[in-house]
Length: 86
Image (cartoon, rainbow, N blue to C red):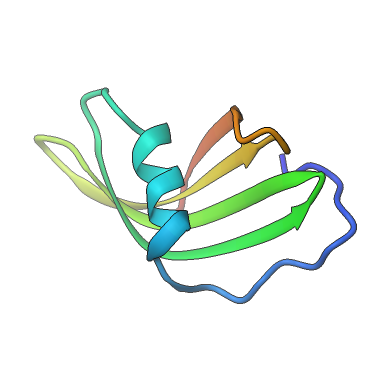
């Protein structure tokens, strides 16, 4: 990830609309709560999404980048969570 596509990445902006729907449907379950704050995307033959999030467990809160790839038919094909150090 990210998959090669012909279009440039959008700028990060507050998560809303279709981006929020993709995130919510892709990140169900698990013992970590992810709160998406900002999103960028790249469209072409499918869509790459990059979500800047706060991740919360029972013990900690930390920043992560969640990358999601949806194929042209709308199926989520890949999810990658990267913990950000600061």
